[in-house]
Amino acid sequence: MPYLGKQLGFTNLAGDELFLDADSDSSIIASTDDQIDIKTGGTDAVTIDSSQNAIFANDVKLQSDSCVLSFGANDEIRLTHNHDKGLILSNTNTGDDKPVKLALHTGETDMAADDVLGVIEFQAPSEASGSDATLLAAAVRARSEGDFSSGSNATSLDFMTGSSENASTRATVRSNGQFFVGATADIGGHTITQKRTGAGGCLYLECNATSGVQSFLDIVNAANNGTSQGVRFHTNGYGNIRGTISWDNSSTSYNTSSDYRLKENVVTDWNATTRLKQLKPCRFNFIEDADNTIEGFLAHEVSSIVPQAVTGEKDGTQDIGRIEDENGNIKAENVLESTKENEEHTWTKTATENVYQQIDHSKLVPLLVKTIQELEARITALES
Image (tube, rainbow, N blue to C red; front, side, top):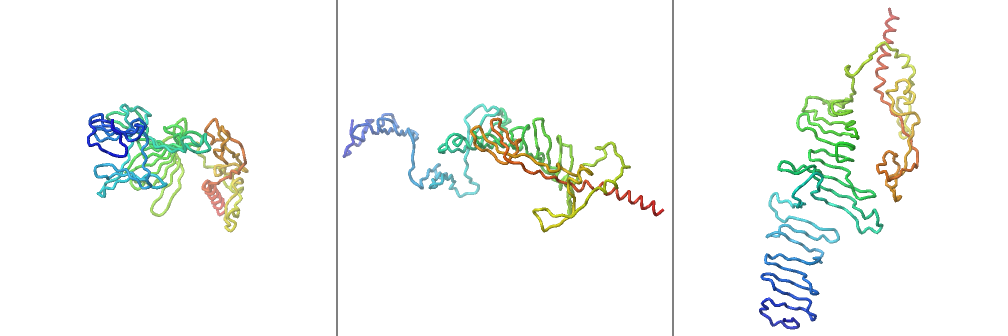
């Protein structure tokens, strides 16, 4: 067989192997019709077949800081190396509506529920800290919601993050437009959903529990449905409206449920003046706003007179602490124990913080009105 040393004297090798080095383990051969094999170390390194496909046995390295891979007969799709930053995928076609498209296609022929169509993952496998630091940190994946059929390809998009473990789903966009936070299904998380569009359209924000929807609010397209209710607050499912925020061209109203059909044991002959006299209106400033003096009440002094006007307890406090995983890594600080979701994590108290009372002054209005009525009656009696 010919050996290529310092001179080339061949015009037709006719299937013979052309050796390129002294020990005859690097060569070019066309022993198969319309196919060229390039060998190094006695092993096929590159094969060019009859369809002009190049098959590489190992890594392909483009060792230029500005190297480009071009695709297509016109080289219109390019993958360019951006030095020390990454890769740029571009479409060089300057025509209208010629975007660059990156598609992830699965080869699976029978998609079932929870099968994954594609995933984009983020990870630091070379992190020197090792252990949890090298695990999957975040991902975005497309997941089937059920068996695919000729009439259905319902798919969810999961957003995944990790803290001290492989990334898991934290939020999901479902095929019907629902956006789940903290869960992938209707139970145990929170959702944002567009229920309807156009006139009467609603955007729902739901707080779910293991027993189902507990409470939510919806933002209504009030301008189109003939009402002024822009925001509605519900409890225990849709339709149980407990309050609304409404507006018109000049003002905004904050409303609470007051329909007679929701009430019982209605009494009108109660004494308001005696209770009103127990209230202690005062002037004060908030500690963080020393220059602004206002009028109001101290919440704990009102709580025994009009308890429904006050939220919280006098001198209320709550314990906050630190959450650590099983390896002692700190996952969160200055949080309540109830925020611990992983049973293998531990919560340790680190401090006690104040929980301040709040007051709803509108709850005092009935007492004021009833007192005025009583005073009016007394004045009328005196005048008579």
